[in-house]
Image 1: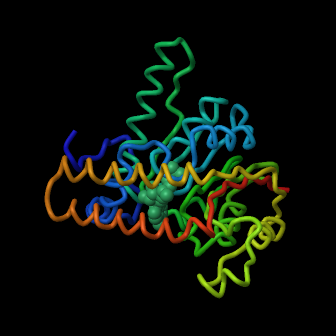
Image 2: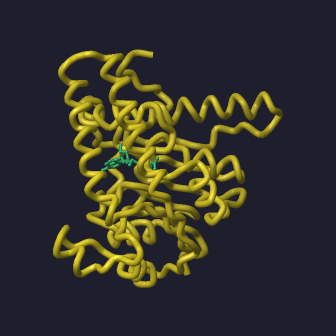
Image 3: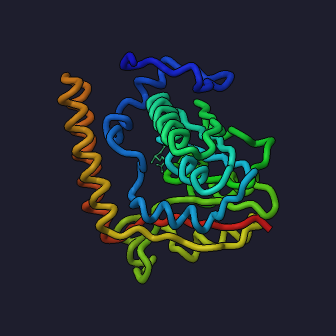
Length: 271
Ligand SMILES: C[S@@+](CC[C@H](N)C(=O)[O-])C[C@H]1O[C@@H](n2cnc3c(N)ncnc32)[C@H](O)[C@@H]1O
C-alpha cells in the first residue's frame, strides 16, 4: 500500500479534512509504528483491564483515541462485542484495520466466528458519540482531549449506558509522595485520591485500577526510540531526523518525570 493511502473500509467523519492529518500525526506514527499498545502498559496489563471490563456478547464498545486498536481486538476476542475505534490519525487507524483483518483471517482459519464487527472512524474524539450510549467506553492515554482526567471521566460517563463500564488510562502522582512538595518542585499534579473523586461526581463506581510498573514505562520509551530510528532509516531526511530529536526530548522528560509520575488504567461502572 502507498505510504499515505487509506483503506476505503475506514470512515472519515463528516467535517474532517484528511490530507493535513497525515502530516500532523506522522511523528506519532514514527514513534509507534512498531507497536500495538501505544502507551506504557504491558500486554498482561491490558489483559487485566479487559478482564475487569468483563465484556459480554452483544455489548457495544467505543474506544476514543483508539490508536492501533488493541483494546477493541482484545474485547472482541473475549466476547462477541461490536466496537468502534475513533482516532484522528489515519496512520493509526490504517494499522488498526489491517491488524483486525489479519486477526479475523486467523479466527476464520481456526473455525471461530469471524464477523467484522469493529469499525474505524477518523474523527475528533472530543465530540464523537455525544448523542449515543455504549456499554463499554474507553480512552487510554489521551486525556488532554478533554483537558485532563476529570473531563475525560465526564466525557466517557456521558457516553455510557447504566450498568456499562469505562476504562481510562492516564499519568498520575506516585502513591506515597507528598503532593505539596511535588507541587513546589514540579507544579500542580493531582493525586490518586483527587483523580478518583471525579468518578462519584459523574455517577460511576470504581471497579479496579491496573498499575504499570516502572520497567514497563522505561521499555515503552525505549520502544519509541527504536521505532523513531527505524523510521529515519526507512524514510531518511530532515523530517525523520526531527522525529528522532523529538523522541530524545521524550526520553529526557521521562527521566525527569519518572520519580514523581506513574501510569494506571482505572475501570469503573455507571450506576
Ligand atoms: C498515547 S496514544 C494511545 C492510543 C491507544 N489508546 C493505546 O492505548 O494504545 C494517543 C492516541 O490519541 C490519538 N489522538 C490524539 N489527539 C486526538 C484527538 N483530538 N481525537 C482523536 N484521537 C486523537 C493519537 O492519534 C493516538 O493514537
